[in-house]
Image 1 (cartoon, rainbow, N blue to C red):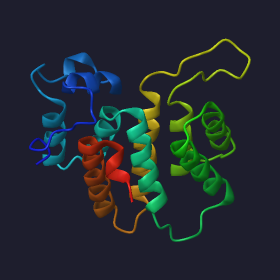
Image 2 (image 1 turned 180 degrees about the vertical axis):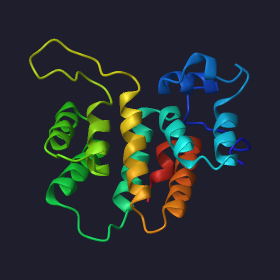
Image 3 (image 1 turned 45 degrees about the vertical axis):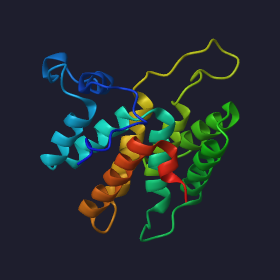
Length: 192
């Protein structure tokens, strides 16, 4: 299914590269000949939706992954209105996506820190904070975020949103389908 079209937005070519980012033990890696797409397709064929989601979040470039998660989280229709803190966190993420800046990245980190529970909005704001730039407080020596952290937060935000949906299986399918389109077309897949 996905292999026919290619994933033009994904710079990694081997499944091993993605699995290394995910922290999967080396002895569990597939052969070097297995492509990024073929491993994903195997996860989908086995109906391992959460694993496919996590894998795709790590395969995509950070900006595309965060934009994908932001679309899933913002399009979700919760049964009850979200709290002002959750709304603020989502607004800060959307602002960063419109104009990625250090100021907006730091604001996302502050919005995430202000929330006590790991809601999808908090996880998404954390993904933005860990997407690049120093994670040390301003004025201190720079500290780069670990390469995999933003992707883990992206996967957590989408996973939490899908699990809270009235039909989680359909929500996962929709999220994965959109993620596949982002992998193929990049940010253009998210234009409205």
